[in-house]
Length: 173
Image (cartoon, rainbow, N blue to C red; front, side):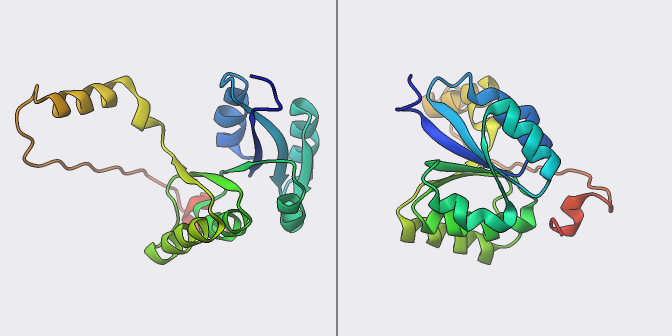
């Protein structure tokens, strides 16, 4: 697909998940391209901007980035405590948001993000790869076809150890 028809993304947050997973994978989609980067790290802005040929913005220039017309969607991979702060303005501006999980740090923040998507008529999606894993898809198909019988109860738990010094333990601040 040509870049003219591709979904143009701005990556907001230049951390590990952006650099190791999202940015390298975009070239393999056939329908997406990265056109901008928003980061608080000038070194990342320079190196990633050059590597991917991106227009770069600092966090304090986010409003300018949103108004630039350089992208159709934002891939937001900031620490959880910063999700609302960056998702809401994009969604209200009509810019779609692909948001890393978890969505936010409280139900109220999640509701504010969803309301912004509705106000801006923009799409909001949470990035969660397990929706498309072969094992997950197989389990869904088995439930739908009745191959495992009539489901009565389903429960799942996800947990992760987070060290006190990790940014996730400080809500990104």
